[in-house]
Structure formats: C-alpha cells, structure tokens
Length: 184
Image (tube, rainbow, N blue to C red; front, side, top):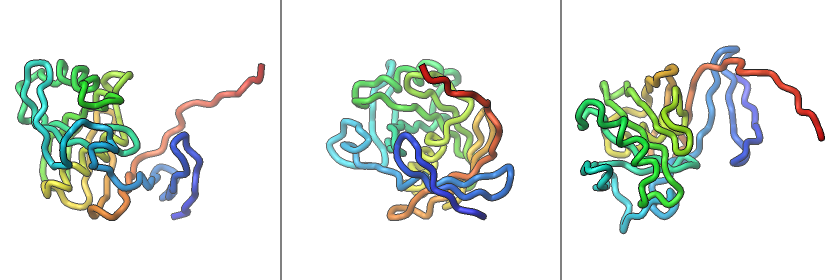
C-alpha cells in the first residue's frame, strides 16, 4: 500500500506498491482532443472514419502521453490486423505516428488486445495501449470502470471512473535486468 513518486522521462509518476508482485501506476487522465494527441480531425469525437491500406476503419483516438489508434478487432476480417497495424502506426493523420491497438471486447469487464507500437512493431505488452483501449471504450459506454486487459504477455487491470479522473493501471512486477553504467 506504500505510495511513491518516481521520475520518468515524461515527468513524475505516482506508484502504489501493492505487494512484492503487484504495482499500481497513476497513468494520468486520457486525452481525447485531436490537437493534443496529435490526430488530424475537425472536432473531437468517439469515432473517426479513416482509410488505411484499402480498409475503411472506425477508430478511436487517444493519448496516454503517446498517441493511440484503437480499432475493434472483431469488426475486421481474420488476419487484417497484420497489415493494418504497421499502416495505421504511420498514417498521415497521426502527425507523430501512433500505437495501433486491436481490441476485442469479451464483456464489460474484460478486453483482449494486441498492439503494434510505432517504431517497434508488434509487442507482447503495452501499458499505455491497454489504458487507451479501455479509455476509448469507457468513453463510448461499452465497458465498466474497471477492466482486465489480456495482452499476449500477460494481463493488466485498468481502472478509470471517467473524464475528470486519472486512470490507474495495475500489473505484475518482474525483474528485467541488472546493469552497470560506465562513464567514458
């Protein structure tokens, strides 16, 4: 239950240590204003029509400190995401590129997600992508205030009551590596 503040490349972050294996992170409030994502659109909306690789898509757009395009995967033909992920990540309407999230709503409290990250490709997990997918669907009224998001690399819980509130992401901790910084 201890709360700590950490410095990150994008500024200070509040983290709650739940136990040795779980941490909750304040991810900030999702941004939907197109100019702040940045995404080229006349007005802010829950749905945007966009042409990508000969597909007419209906996407959601949000920023969690980085731009995200959210696509309902069950509305696509099998295998289409493989082409659409890279194409959507570099689409001209996203001035800085975007992470492309392909989400399936299993029910009001469960989502399944795959993310093609701009500049990195398909990932095992994307915390900001899970947050953006939940926020887009929550804003549309399609999910509850707390959802579990299944990613290829594991599950995250995302909690967001709605606009005017910060979004919290909870997930497992794991030791990744140990290193030593050597000065020149």
